[in-house]
Length: 245
Image 1 (tube, rainbow, N blue to C red):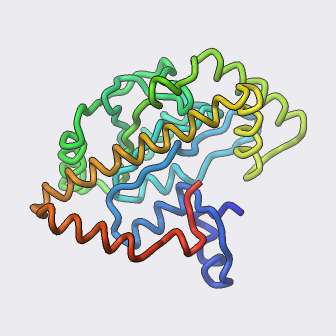
Image 2 (cartoon, rainbow, N blue to C red):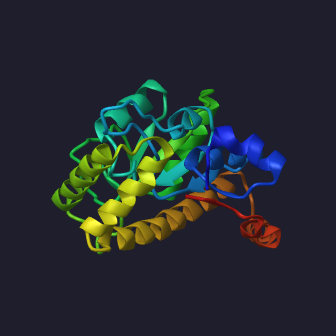
């Protein structure tokens, strides 16, 4: 089952297993003082008529770390999501792009106010962000790999059909996102799933490069960073049953 930030206390106390949302992963990572976190795409403001806003957004506003993603999920209202991020004081920086990526697609038509062209640039921005007393996350967005990115029109058509079907079926709340993603996968004949896996790997690779840049800013040697990587492997966090979705 999905576990959001609000569910963590219950899950821990009762020994339940779950797949953590971005919000829950941010909360846990903050406790561990993790500074860089990669995911596929964040949640945001939904498109359906009833009001539905992801808990990811307020958690981003109070979690001081770098979050690498491919934008918000394509099934969402992207302009509204960007407005909420602005209101919450969460900076959004394009990595080698000046346009907000749309998860499965590189194109949304939404311009970004800032971009970075290297992991070192991102590390410097984050350092300045923290030095100025800002407590929010720094959202770093990059497009999916070109060979896996889907055309904007294809994604939009699939999402519109999926949303219409969800409204007809009366799907709401936590069930909405997985239902919509599954519907888009059917509409694109599996291409959206391939794009999802590719962008996850791409985001993880960039997050690792940014983490190295941050460590070097801190004056850590390559040997120290290697020891840290070995300790992380030894912890074997995956065996705990928690993972991000």
